[in-house]
Amino acid sequence: MPRRNAPLSPATRAAQALRMIDPVTGAVVPGIQPASTFARDADYAPRQSYIYARDGGPTVEHAEKVLADLDGAAESLLFASGMAAISAFTETFARGDHVIAPKVMYHGGQTWLHRIAERRGVEVTWIDQGDPAALGAALRPGRTTWVWVETPANPNWDVVDIAASAEAAHAAGARLFVDCTAAPPPCLQALALGADIAFHSATKYMGGHSDLTAGVLSFADAKAGAEMRPIRSLLGSTIAAFDAWLLIRGLRTLYLRWDRACANALAIAQAMQGHPKIAEVLYPGLPSHPGHAIAKAQMTGGFGGMLSLMVTGDGSIARDVARFCEVFVPATSLGGVESLIEHRKVVEGPHSIVPNQLLRLSCGIEAPEDLVADLEQALERAA
Ligand SMILES: *Cc1c(COP(=O)(O)O)cnc(C)c1O
Image (cartoon, rainbow, N blue to C red):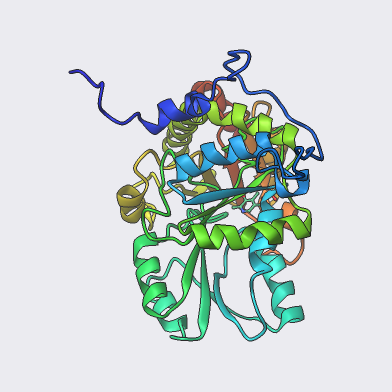
């Protein structure tokens, strides 16, 4: 079948970083432009759109174009970390705003929302986002400004129906912010499902090599993106050119890495189900997971590389398993090429509501049999 007039698949566009061949040298890899400032022309006008690196520059802009393309966004803006993007987003909240957020979500974002609520006079209603009726009950038509969902959500991998959440939020005059860090563009198109902002910690799958921190806000509406630009400049939270360049490189292999991470996670989830020392496997790709049906409908390119294991016993066995692994690296974060294991409660600190028995796994791209064998030997050694 000739495909000459068919649109290119996003995997192709990502692999070629939008085919931005350097017009001068023909280089197939973009250069890094680290300049902090840009000279004006004879009429004292900017030569292109660039003035000062805190507002962005050519390398950052290239990465943003690739991200906007993959997210189907009117505009994507890059930040120095996921939390820099989150704090720029919450900078748009005004005194008296009502915001709805999940009780169980990425702990850094939650800690920040608590602080905003206390210091800014923003009211937050915390809901169980796994309960489909909870959002409707919490919305206050005409008062709620933002609904925040995370899907699949740390560390239980609860799945939220984005289209239904967007419909409910919009009917009440609110907008929808989705933390899609665990479900990047190869599997989820949050904006097409109705979200107003898709957020990613690009430190994770998008960068993919545990060598940068970055955050992205992708906007459905160009006006909302334009309004965010001066906030980012004034907060000084723009990503550096070198990190943007590393991100472009990471995005070129995103689709390939994603497929392998999903396959590895499924293989591990299946191998751990029924293991005598595992009480429960939390993975949206398993039919036993409460969010499986929604995940199957909404995540069209795999269920992700993240899963959690509920280990039997009081939590000391879980900590031992994390200590005894020799292939999984005992470290926080996710979405890199190397698999990571973490005892989440220790990482989050004493206020964490995560159960002591929970181990969070980020599956990388190693051979699945090595990962399964590693968990099996660590489980055997743990008391
Ligand atoms: C890591 C992470 C963040 C924060 O991103 P950083 O890049 O670490 O600042 C936000 N949400 C989720 C789900 C994350 O995993």
